[in-house]
Image (cartoon, rainbow, N blue to C red):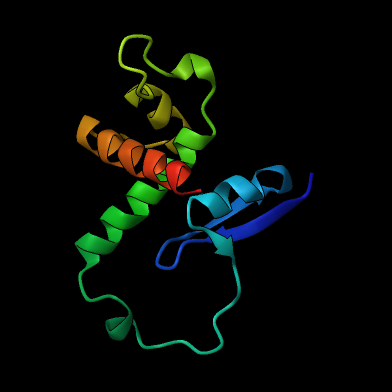
Amino acid sequence: MSRIDMQKHIGGVVSVHVDKVADYEAMGYTVYKEPEDTKPYNELISDAAQVDEINTQDSIMQAIHNLSPDDFSKSTGKPNVKAIENVLGFDITAKQRNDAWSAYQDALEEH
């Protein structure tokens, strides 16, 4: 199965099946390239909590993209928190789901 590494401008690297590349590009991802030079750790992260939240939202958006239609609420249309948690392997809040869901929908509307 062919996969491509993709990344948001400040997010983690995600391995994406080639059939999903266009979908991820629509969400603002680009093909990952190794950095040419690296900065010291203290110059890379100015606010660790902010970086963690951004990475978590990106992870939640990726999980949402990979959910099946059965993983969405029939009444609200939102993805179920437990379904996202099952994909991620860690707990999230409903607020985190809502924020990521809103960003996911915005990304799809932009393209």
